[in-house]
Every structure is written in structure tokens, then in C-alpha cells.
Image 1 (cartoon, each protein chain N blue to C red):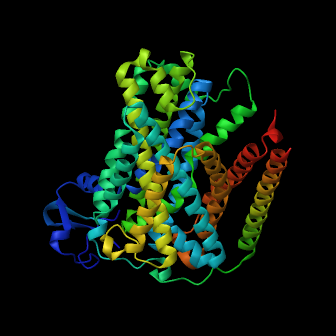
Image 2: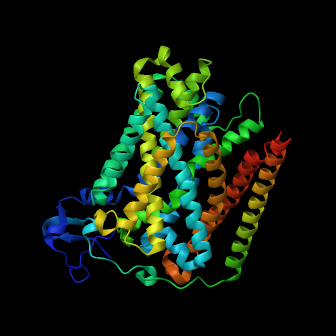
Image 3: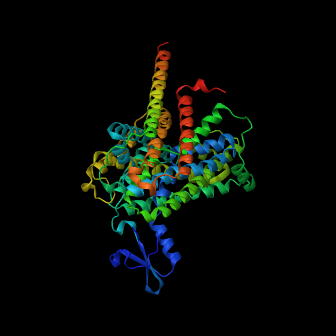
Length: 438
Length: 72
């Protein structure tokens, strides 16, 4: 941030737009708080229903053995999302618009259709998780799912980006309760720290299941919709060039918080592992832990599952609606009232309504939806990251100041290669399970 | 664009991004022309096309296998 001493270089702004403080640290803190939001939300919303299921399952199957992967994923998620924040600040436009304009209609439509399709399927899994958790809480899905859908629509329909952002930040911070649940497992802190810092393998060694779970963790930690969401969010918030360092800090703190929450989820799952409990999903774990953890643990897991699903649902639906609006050239902003951006809000409401409706249909093959999400997300992530990397090397667009540095490119191409390999392995594992027998 | 300034008597101001004056962004904020197809860009897109074709073929093969299995 630049503190301007010369009145000549200081743009004149109306006094009512300025907040005055007497200390420099207050100024810095206030500025960070004003800029923060997109980074935290994009990271924590990724701890959605699928992530809760994956992390809890990882703990249940392997105890604390996979905690180190989270530490490894921290810089990967940060570097990927930092590129998105930088691109959003530099261009003031969303990711879908950038791909459409710079790579042409074919790639633009491919990216958009791919994003909308996989986002919709992911949204179905969010509502499925809401239905499942509420059933275990004694609330009928026929009530819980429509109420959740209506709440998600109300969240965006107020015509205020800031109101949406502040509400969602509160939802993100509710995830602090995962730490409370993790503390109640009485996991030995030195062992947890050791498992986080020192990579270790489970007793059975490397098996197909182990590889699959590792890939699932990577897949759930870095998702394609995150790229589109954060760039659109940064553009929506009209972050300025000088805000980049605060946006980076926001993204970094969001990544750290998200990984800590993910670690807490793994510890809760590991508690089930230590009690030799069998379960297929987090709701069953909540029931199974009732005799050991009491009502707090039981209801806590179920309510946090609902919170994770709501967070994921609003972020994913907005990523789709922003992207659709950008490509179609429609007004696409939470600053606008519903009647000022009808296409944008219609896309949001229709996807929410359709996903909620599908979950309420009896005997819908939700397992097929979940597998399809994994495959499609795996297919889409490398292409989304390649476009991101090419855009960040586009000097004609960004100029010398905002393009990637050489070390950026080394790091990012390494991430691209890693994600390509993991995505291919994931797709192979799902589509041709016998091909990866170890 | 700068968004902070020092006041006399050590006062500092902060302006919320949404209340600040708009900045001139890279690319001018208007619709941009397509990216120049330099060699690295061409190679990257070629790798991406190959990857996508391979994955489509894999999905098709898997669906065929499942269909054949279902008929037997």
C-alpha cells in the first residue's frame, strides 16, 4: 500500500467516502479488513460437503497418516489462487470473460459449458448432503431442502455484494467449531504435529485405495470453480492495483484457515478410526460417535455438514452465474437488484432450484452424480489451470508489471504437470478401475 | 490508483474499494482481441486438445465396456 504524502498525487475524494484513523497500523488493518473476503470465501467454501466427506473418510481409513498432504497442498492452493486474484485485479474482469476474449469462442464455450455442468452436479451433491444431515437431525428433507434453497436465494437477492460477503464470511468463521470438535477427540498434539510435518505412509503401504484417497484430497482441495469464482469476486469488489498485497494476504490466510479446518475434519474422522467405527458418510459417523462424543459431537458434525454445503452451494452457484453473465454480456453483479440483472439472477435461482428439486426425487442415483463430479472436475482442472497460466504470461494484456515472473512460471508449470498427472490417474481410477491395481 | 493519504496531524484515511474512483485496468476494460498464437500458446493448446481427446476416448471406451457387460 502506498501512503501518499504529496497532495498533488493524491486523488481528491469526497470526505464521506473516507475513513480516517490516527495510527498507521490502524490504517493498514482497516484496509486489509476492507479488501479481505474473496480469498477467505473461495478457500473455505471449498471445504464443502464433498470435502467434509473426503477428509473425514481419510481420517477414518488412515488415522493421522494423511495430515502431511494438507501441508503440501497449502502452497499449491495459494499459488493457484494468487494468480487468479492478480488477474482479477489487473483486468477487472472475470475468468470466463478472459478465456472467451483471449482464446476465442470455441475455448470460451467449452470452458463455460464444462464449468456449468460440473458446478451443477456439485450443487446436487451439496443439497444431497443437506438432505442427509437434516434427516439425521430429525428434519424431513422435504422441509430442509426447500428452506435451504430459499435461504440461498435470499442471500444474494438483496442487491448488495457487501451484505452477501459479510454473511458468507460469518458462515466461513462458523467452521471454527471444527476445532472444538477436534479438541474433543483428545488427539495427542505431538503426534498430530509430527504427522503433519513428517510424511508417513499407513501400515498397509501404498495401495490403490490409498492413491485414490490422496487424489480425492487433491481434487477436493483445488477445484475448477475456485478459479472462476475468485476472479469474478475480485472484479465484483473492484479491488485496486494497490490492494494486491492485501488480496494476497487474504488468500494466504484463507488457505491456512481452510487447511487447519480440513485437518480438524481428519482428526474427527480419525477418532472414528481409533474407536473402530464403520461408516460410509459423515452423517453416519456423527451417529456412531454419539456414545463417545455426546450430543455436541453428534449435532456439531451434522450442523457443520449443513454449513459446509450452504457455503459450497452459494459460491458454486455464483461462480456459474457470474461466468454465464460474463460470456453472454448480460449485467452480472450482486450490486444490482434482481430486475436490473434478470439473466444473472435467473441463472442463480434456476440452478439452485433444479439441484434442490433433483435431490427430492426419490431413488435418484446420487452415487453416479458424485462419481461424475469427480471425473468431470478432474477433466476440467488441467484445462482451467492451463488457461490461467497462459493468461498470466500474456504481456499484451497485462504488461510487464503483472505477468508471471520466471519463478512463478516454474512453480506454476510444476503444479500444472502434477495436476495433469493426478487428474489422469483419477479419471483412470474411476473409469477403468482395474488399470491401476497395485 | 492510490487509495490512502496522509492528513495533517498524522491522520490517515482509508477508502473502501467499492467507494473509490474506478481505475484504468489492463486491457482497457473493453472487449479484447484474441491472444496472439505464439509457439508456447500453440503447444499448450495442442497438449490440451490431445488430453481432452484422450479423455473423451477413455469415457467412450468405458461406456462401451459397460454397455457390452450389461448385454451379457
